[in-house]
Image (cartoon, rainbow, N blue to C red):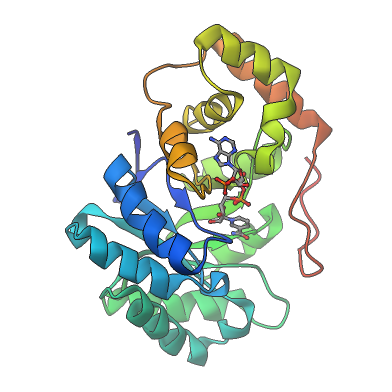
Length: 274
Ligand SMILES: NC(=O)c1ccc[n+]([C@@H]2O[C@H](COP(=O)([O-])OP(=O)(O)OC[C@H]3O[C@@H](n4cnc5c(N)ncnc54)[C@H](OP(=O)(O)O)[C@@H]3O)[C@@H](O)[C@H]2O)c1
């Protein structure tokens, strides 16, 4: 497993995504993922599965310090006075004293991000979270967030071979921040691409494995594929025994010029142009 080391963090570059993993399936998949070797779990208040993840973590029985747990504040909990209670609820459901990373799930025009980040920083000082970050922030919103003077570890955004994120990657590089790639498999679309298929065949790997390898082989990029079965979870982890050559990395990067964005809710910000 590659670990990303920046800003005092050691973040496992491949995490386990849990959106739409609910109920018994979620509870059962967490110990499976940990047994396979995942140590980084990605959840959010909005996923409605923190309690099941907490149960799964207890069932697995690993030491807390060996795990990386990320959760996210939903848009209706970003007012500064709501942050402590919202985090406390997440901790209670997850059955832990602290999060490794707490993110603003989506930017919101209803609040001042600077005030939200200040409230989150207060929770960090109190020991209830180790690192802070954002999700779905644009370059302009990152620049605005700089004004809070709060150290941010990561911006979690959609990133896969069909969406280049050039501007955002440059802005994150300038800040030594991690880009955590969500929808890293383009929700299955990577399996249908001829270029990725050709590279996969050359390495004896699947297109999904090549897409994930392409992500984690980039500096300060983490990926959090979601898997609903042991078979998929295991396959997605088997990407540390091969590497892509520079020409293969470039061929996959070139696919991103088509800019196919999959996650576009009505509350999304005005995305960056490139
Ligand atoms: N911050 C945000 O706003 C935001 C937004 C979206 C997602 N996320 C996070 O990112 C995570 C991943 O994104 P995502 O779930 O949208 O998309 P994804 O990881 O790109 O795709 C998940 C889909 O791919 C399938 N899959 C997984 N491994 C596979 C494999 N080895 N071979 C074939 N198919 C495979 C899964 O099927 P099975 O379920 O059948 O395994 C599922 O249908 C989420 O779970 C969530 O934690 C965050």
